[in-house]
Image (cartoon, rainbow, N blue to C red; front, side, top):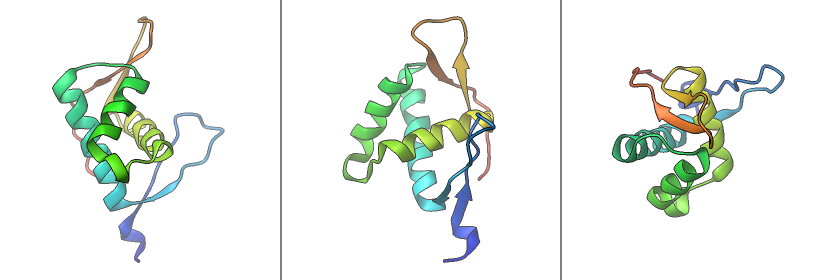
Length: 98
């Protein structure tokens, strides 16, 4: 596989390293996250993970979901809804090409 077949994710915590994920897997999880938020609106990261798991079923890996979600926050595709408890994640509406 070429390096073009992978995405190096970025963690919002500068003390943590990014993870190299296959581009096809990244896009599969990313698309499921965006579809869930488009359908249901802001929700907790746990609720979002459950919806993505329902969509992807056997292809779901919670650790990959978390890495992709955090990377999407760094790239501005997702945002945390501030001053709300429980903490919610929402769609920022900004496109990001990977």
